[in-house]
Length: 136
Image 1 (cartoon, rainbow, N blue to C red):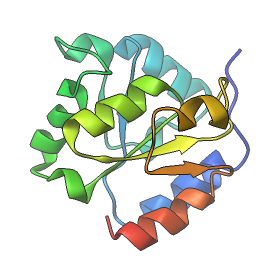
Image 2 (tube, rainbow, N blue to C red):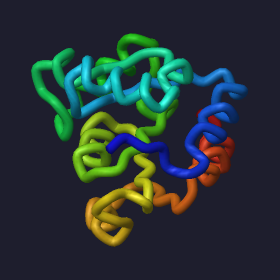
Image 3 (cartoon, one colour):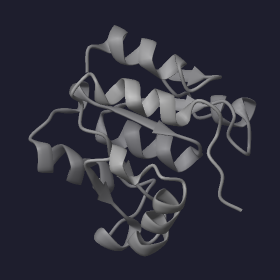
Image 4 (cartoon, rainbow, N blue to C red):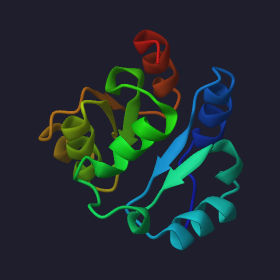
């Protein structure tokens, strides 16, 4: 039941070359999120994680993203939130961070458009262009 979408590993490899902080802001408990990342062999790409059990107010509240910003002493304009659900977009907006919705999400791009993300991508590699444009 756990699978990687096409291009995700290559995209993460490319982003690591930009010396970015890659952080998981999960809507799952830490143990479950970590397990999924280990099974898919993606855990090593990430520098840190804020999971549902690390915060008092989970997404769509801004607390999980604010925790990341505080941890790395960053402002909202230095980050992007990439997500596959409405909570991700709403949390980003609440925290003053631009959002990138993934069009291949289970609910689809049309559903996510309703929440007005800053970007919608159709392929993982599209995120690389956005990172370069935004200069984050």
